[in-house]
Amino acid sequence: MIGIRTAARVAGELRRDISAAHERDPAARGVTPIEILATWPGVHALLAHRVAHALHDAGVPVAPRVIAATARTVTGIEIHPAADVGDGLFIDHGVGVVVGETAEIGENVTLYQGVTLGGTSLKREKRHPTLERNVVVGTGAAVMGALTVGEGARIGAGSVVVTEVPPNSVVVGVPGKVIYRDGRKVAPRLDLDHADLPDPLTKAVEQVLDRIHALESEVQRLRRAVDQPVEPDPRP
Image (cartoon, rainbow, N blue to C red; front, side, top):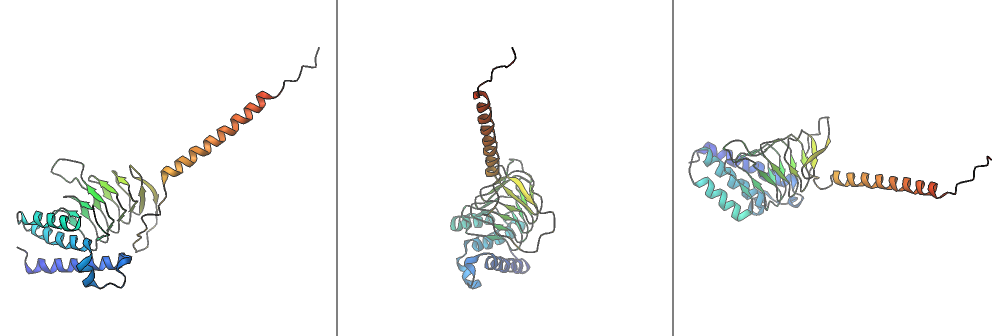
């Protein structure tokens, strides 16, 4: 079973999870840590996962999956007991969040509701994504397969990511495309703005419309040239 040292580690992780919710959830302003512990489903899911993960690492059978299944029923958040979750994970609202067996989540990551960290293989291998430090994954996004999302990256709401994401990038779309990457070192703060992101599809449509307007103007010019009367040749 969990020893005193492991229990102390779980308690320390729980304190950091509560602190993350307090810092990154605007609704937690002025709320006490006790209230967050009592009422935040993301914190409940993480507490259950910390215990289940410790039991899983200790080789305890059945109990880790029972804890994970109970937490899923109560919170709507499913985290496999084997998933490696770093300190300071914040799951906002959390309903529909799924974290697969071989997923790895770094420190200070933020997941919004409906996020899936899913697998794309039936083999017993690394088949779920790795999210490095300070990653933000927007509402309804899916990150699929054994790929890495680099430190400080932002995944836009509703995106489907199936390829590697460089650090400090912004990814949107289906399939997800990197539309912005700041080559400079980012400031050591968390950017939670996962809604106001550029839309590459809208930009492409605008370019097509501009091209259509240019072609229409060219067609009108040609019609005017064709409709002009032909002057008679003055030569005998």
